[in-house]
Amino acid sequence: MQDVLISPPLWQYAVLFNRFNYPFELEKDLQLRGYHTLQGSFPYYPKSMKCYLSQTPDRVPAERHQTGHLKKFYLLNAASLLPVLALELSDGENVLDLCAAPGGKSVALLQCAHPGYLLCNEYDSLRVRWLRQTLESFIPQPLINVIKVSELDGRDIGDAQPETFDKVLVDAPCSNDRSWLLSSDSQKAAWRIHQRSSLPVLQGDLLRSGIQALRPGGILVYSTCTLSKAENQDVITYCP
View 1 (cartoon, rainbow, N blue to C red):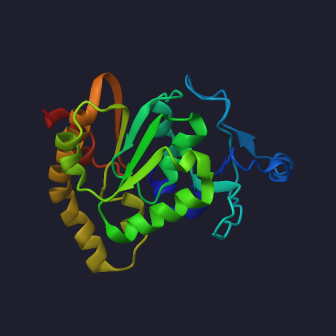
View 2: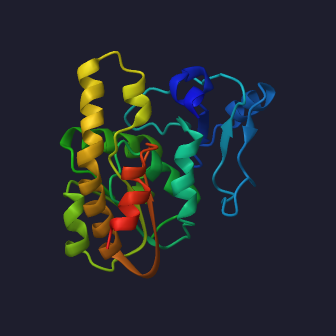
């Protein structure tokens, strides 16, 4: 695990295809280069989602954003798909992505199924612009009509929309091990360590809000990109 965290060549860069502008030529190229699909690797894996990754260090160049043009693929770490798959999304469900920016998991959700309603929430105004651009780049206009982007404090959504959503994703802000392990900025590293003592309070509040927003019998997934027990198991254990 330590090697994966500190060595960029060992990161699993994955290529998530956009089913709304399917990259047939790229698929052939990736297959020739030894990429393999994740399809069939998990109990829930919809046929509409197609993701390729390589077992050797390799990365496909990212596409540039062009207004009015749908991108054909999204680059991400394959592990980022796990929270999305755990939701087991079906067509017509109401879905909340509580901390949605930069938008990769929202895009992945829409590769799984056509929701009846998808609320993508992000509190940070700068990240909201990034989120809107991501959605514009990957989602066709007819489907955009069932998506709403909000800029609310995620801690308030549960009170504002109780028992509203069939599926809720709480991909909470976290101390992000990889970003500070690779930083040469000692002040930034110290700040990340400080966050490990303060973030669990916020994470717990977001989780409680997500639970409030979830309808009875629905599914909620809480996820982070840190190995910190205080930000993962402890948040879940101590969240009433």
